[in-house]
Image (cartoon, rainbow, N blue to C red; front, side, top):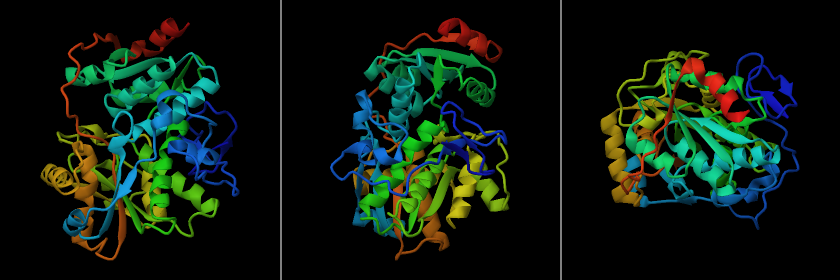
Length: 391
């Protein structure tokens, strides 16, 4: 069953992505008797909490990432710090959790293709996961995408379509097609993706032997991952694995921080921004589709949202490498930069057990040289393109 976090409407259709009120939906039907399978690995530990029964192909390798402590980094961060290293997922980011569930659900419903609107880790993750099970994947990217990113995405042989026009509007147009059985869009806040990304919280809580942490800190872009973590914590609480929820703290780059700005203003909703230049390119989302839900998550858990500068991100990225041995992309390093800022402000302290989510790896090899030549369309041609390709 899908439910709206805001107005509490429920829907039976598994293909629906948005409530009539306009807010994103999530799965809300986990039984209080749900149990974690201690004999399972990866996402298979949490099958009782997910809307699919198995994870074919690359999905078998998603999740089950390592939670570990590095005292040198904890001293620098100013708290009792543990890191969940999502760089060890099959394609190097937490996106593989959501892709595993999204692709498995699409196969269970016998759709013809999966799609995503992304120009980064999610596009690569979806293309790889779909390729591992022989499912067609359509990736829609902005027309100005850097060629090296096309190389990383294109190595898995998806159909790549470069769209000229408002990228936020393209996202909304793809949601309008979410009930089309010919293609299932597994975008950043699709219910199946949010369910899969909820296992991030489950791996954290399991790593603390179900007794903590006091706070979980992660980067925020679309708000989908934050939503998933919140949903995962709620499901664990319902099933009796948690007595109370950890505080959720979200971190954004100062050049593009609509969620953090709304939090500072004490607004109820997130106002879109024009994204500025930042090294945290992957999270520079000025119009987050799940921004309101992410904002609700930090308020409901007595957490918060903060912004960090590019210089702070660079320093945090260096500390992750030299003090923890983790090669993180700048967007992932915002987590540590945010924790450092939160401890400096007194929101977190030396006695707090804090889990920081390192969401994705820094690329260590040059991209493939065989860069695909994408199909080019205008936004106005989007629906006609889908009709032609998937008819």
